[in-house]
Image (cartoon, rainbow, N blue to C red; front, side, top):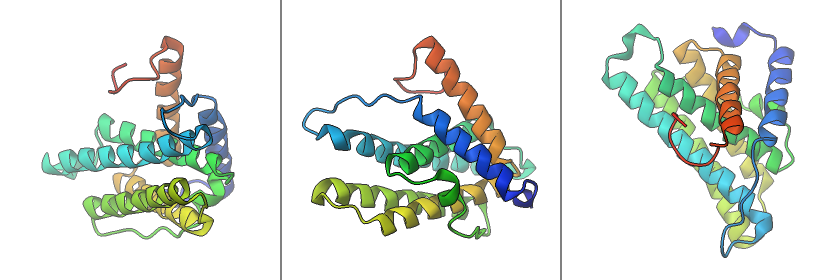
Length: 194
């Protein structure tokens, strides 16, 4: 299993370095009608949910195209990177250590890629639910937020394992993509070809 290829200490350092970097690539724009102190949490929660849905869409495309050769298409890897970016941003937004949350839930592999991805979508939804209640009620249930983020990370690791792709590879590819956009001034917008 790929998960054992790197020691937890090495990947933890890599994750924390990635999370430090991710924090430098975002400036919060104020959303009309939203308390500025909550705007970033909302954007990050929406981002996690949206990117996770895009992972699911790419998994369906991959599986429907007969993805038996187990070589994941670039778009699927890009969406995995984007969803991980928002995971890291949310951990930092709420004062959590990304690597601690990354390993907080045990890896439980589902039988197939679609089921594993659905598990990831459900966990992202739980994170969004915790953020929604934080904005709506003014109090954060940290336990539910951390459980959702940990579940997301465990499912994300499982998707990587089923695709036989190292998490560090996805992080490095995502970092290069976002850095290139940052240089070109094309962070905002949509689509992978910016």
